[in-house]
Image (cartoon, rainbow, N blue to C red; front, side, top):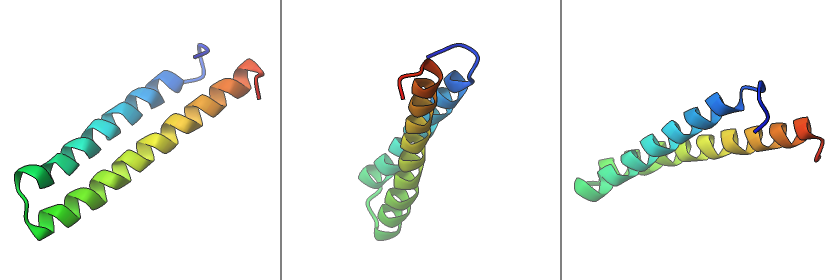
Length: 69
């Protein structure tokens, strides 16, 4: 990543969101009830999707800063 574009902080935030999403999904494994399954998959999936979007945003911004795209 190029320095000074703030991408490192966003990548770290995306990693934290991804870990939280995975932990939420794992809750359904350890306590399998219908409500925990629905809640953990829904909110875990949202967190993982948001972290993926943040990651793609940082990659595209970095590629633009380097003049690749």
